[in-house]
Amino acid sequence: MTFDREQLLARLDELEIDHETIDHPAVFTVDEAQAHTAHLPGGHCKSLFLKDKKGGLWLLVCLDRRRIDMNRLSKVLGSPRLSFGKPELLLEVLGITPGSVTPFALINDDSHRVQPLLDKAMLDYDLLNYHPLTNEATTTIKASDLPRYIQAIGHDVRIIDLDAEGIDRG
Image (tube, rainbow, N blue to C red; front, side, top):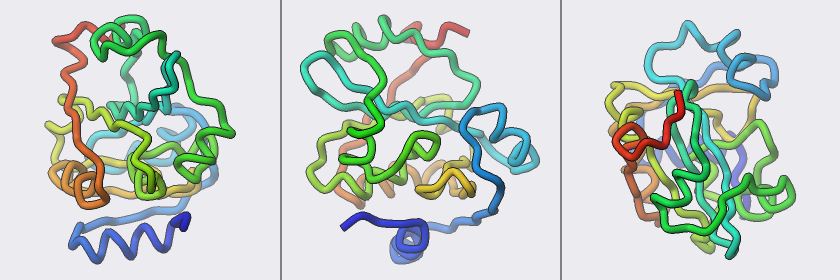
């Protein structure tokens, strides 16, 4: 089963995760998103769907202004040569299209093929903002609820300190 926005929000309710969602025009970049969501409190985030040379899949969830050194991330993860996953693979594994990449999409990864990576600095915020499986809306949750959500849907949580590891090129 592939979850859609309404089913995701219902699942958050079942997990007793408070959330608030606003609608906006479709956005495909951080700058486009900021034009519609900059007024929202909390950390604004992006998610990168990555594939390594051996077929391993990763979802890096970090603050939206991070500039990621993919070579350094690959070394830290012990994963051979990372690249962005193709749109077809994104749809197959997470049930979403480019522009809608979000940690909420892990709910569609029944086979647990994707390893989520959470930015330590992102979790220092009280609130975080993500797309609810569509890039036409943004959902705000408590930062403390993100790891709980990921664990509740059967994924392991890995927190990575992008600053300490030298992965943020910014």
